[in-house]
Each structure stands twice: as structure tokens, then as C-alpha cells.
Length: 460
Image (cartoon, rainbow, N blue to C red; front, side, top):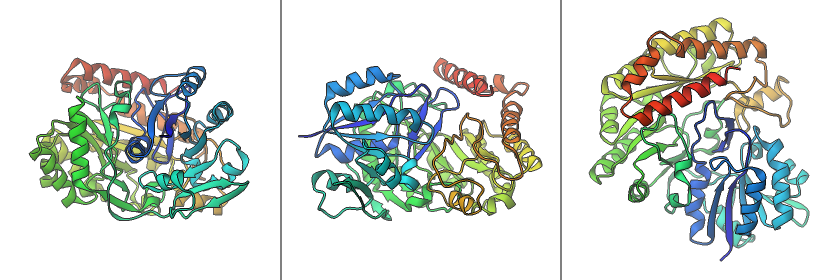
């Protein structure tokens, strides 16, 4: 049986490369690459699977190369991204030279520049454009079979199979969570030291043009598949989950069914999810709470609805306030995520968003720098308008200096406004004391303080 190594390359920072996005962690949190979680299940029936997450395990290049040579893989599936490709590629080239393994890339950089990267980098043999299908199995077993979502090299030619993402219901074999060193991961809103990362769907039914995920359409996993996975996670002693769905409860009826199944199957978990404020109503929230939900991360982005409507993002400010109030009343913590420097935003509108982040009463706020992410509609628009060049360049929405200007704001202004947002939200009288009072364990206090110091360091 051939050996497949799922490789997240080493790096000096907490590079987060998953779901065709990449950024640098704003503090010290780092969750499992969901691509590898899913692929560990899909590939296990056909190959011997190994996982090396060099970021989680804090392995340097020398340590990583030594371990790779010890495994001696036939196939390496690796992650890369705009935040790390400059250090990833020389290391991956060395790995190719030492192992001669077939090397397949996943990451944001391949969504727009797959053929260019294949052509210019001898060590990349193929690119995978959807990690939730059996296309990778078909490719590895028989290049002549019918499959999609793969671009590869053959006899110095680049062969492009169509990028096609299915809809409806899908199924994957149970992921191999036991292969991951779960105690090496850290999530800022986790109630326990060890957690697992799970998806119950793939893609997103909404069409926000600054987000890459709607590129993949939208499909839902069979509920029984998810329950089987959660039961296994419980069996190996993990009781904390991060649902990595881009929009949990996009289908509210299915979300209720899943929560009822978690409860009726007596699966002992507490969990965090990502969602949208306009989807949440009291009955759904009550069922989520009963099933173990303790934190919801909501994409708010901006209080400037006129700006957001340009990016096909719609939700009423009053509904957002109502949802956050509902969560507070049920004892569910909330996180608001915001984008600083969206095209069309100015200093006044961003300052109103900063005020709004406090008005809605979220427990935590995440302020991200706008980036024209690969695979997004807004990136194509900005290229056509000659705002950015059609080429690869470093982008990070986390802690790095802005890579682009929106036209109304200079990069230095965007950077200062992000700093102002963080200081204004977190450096408030009694805020830290109230948060510590809400902690239920020494682990939660320690985790919160560790993340807080990490965020403050990112202001430099």
C-alpha cells in the first residue's frame, strides 16, 4: 500500500493555511487544517496515511525533513499560501529532491495561478481544487479515469481537469482524528485544552464577493456521517469541537436536526461555530445551546451597509443587535469579525464600525485587514480596475501591514485604524475583569490571557 503524507510545511510564524485561505494567526491560536482532516478519511481506504503539521508541532525545516525521510512517502499532499509561499517553496523543492515523491498542492495561491505555479516550479506535480471529493483518489489510482478538480503535469504538458463543485448532499469516510496531535492545537474560544475540528457542510450559499468560499458552491454532509464522526471523537476522549462550516445553520432545519441528533445520541461535546446574524432565531439558538454550543462567531464586517451591499453582503443592523442580545440572554458568547479597509470605506465609516462593535455587546471582536483574496470576485474586479496587479503577492488579513490601498485610504491609515479598533474594543475599564469573571476554569483564564497578550503584541 502506497504511503501518503499530508504535510503542512514548517514556518517561523503561526501560518494558518486551510480551506483555500491563508493568514498569520493574530495571537497564538492555531486550529487543524480542515483540508487534511477531510482528506485523512477520504484517502484512508486506499493508502497508508501520515500527518505532519509542522506548524502545530513547532518543527523547523531540519526536523521536518528528517521526519519526512523517515516516513519515506510515495505521495505528499502539501499546503501553501500567499503568507508563506516564499519560505514554503524552497523547502518543498528540497523535499522533492530528497524523496522523489509525487507532490500535490492545496492553497489559495492555486485558485488563480495553478498553471503558472505548475509551470515554474518543478517540484509541484499537481494541484487539488476541492478536498471534499474522491477526485484525488481517482487521480492517484488511475490518471485515465473520470475525475475533476485536478490540474497536473504529464510529459511536460499541463493537463487541466475542470473545477466543478457539486451541490446537494455529500458523504465522506470518517476522518482520522487520531492521526493528529490534537493537544498541539489551540483555539481562543475553546472551553477545553484539547479539541477537534469538523465540517458539516462545504462552501457557502451566500455570495459575498470578498469571500472565496462561495466559489465552491454549497453542499451538506449527511447528518448520520457527522454523528458518526462526533461519536468517534468522543470515543478518543475529545469533548470540544470547532465546527469549521463557513456558515453554520445556513439550512436552519438541517441545523436543528443535527443538534437534536447530537443531544439524542448523548454525544458529550461543547462547541463553537461560525454563522450569520440574520439566520439566528430564538428556537434555533435554544436547540444549539442544548446540543452544546457555547460560542458563535459572526461575520459582521462593517456597519456601513452601503459599502457592504457593493459586495453582495446584506443584513440589517437592528437584526445584528437583536441576535447578539438573544445570544447574551441564553448565555452563548459571541465574537464579531470586522474588515478594516474595504473598498469604499473611509475613516468616518470605519470609526462608526468600531463604535458599533461595542454597541452590539459582543464578547470578543476580531478586526481584519481587507485583502483581495485569491479566488474572489472582488479580486477580479480590482484587477480589471487596475487597482491591483494580476500577480501573486504577499497578503495577510491577520497581523501584517496592509498590502493594498482602497483608494480612499492609504495603507498607513488603514493600519492605524486597525490599531485603534483593537485598543478601543479591548482596553476598556472593567472589560478584562468581566471576561475573567465569566471564565469557568483556570484553563479558560490562561487561554484568554495568552490570546490577549498575543493580540497586543500584534499592534507593534
